[in-house]
Length: 124
Image (cartoon, rainbow, N blue to C red; front, side):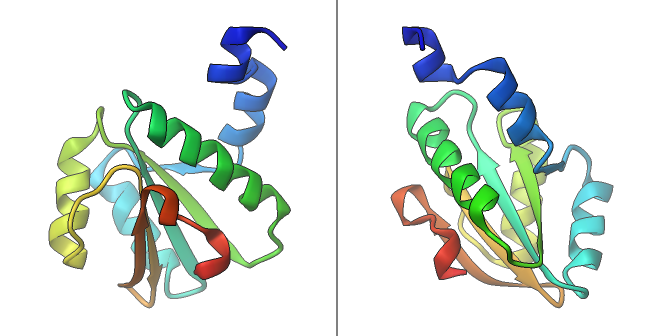
């Protein structure tokens, strides 16, 4: 594996990880995630595409996702491209903005959030 592949990941790995996520790009996507949280847990991963730490934590979390058999939905927010939605999440769920950040919803409410190295699927 080349140096750049180690940092950014291979394209096939990126394609596989993209299939694990539902993207939040507009407020309606967030509304749908909240609706889904009444059926089972919803996890929202807020990611900064400009931050190496965020990229590292994301890769580690995606590995946990692939190994998990839990019934939950995973949503991805590129907070650089969609900071307005990140602000809406902060306001709606009374969760202070962090990056990277994992927010877990159940029955329309945030019941868990963690940032940086504290993001761990086993703790949800």
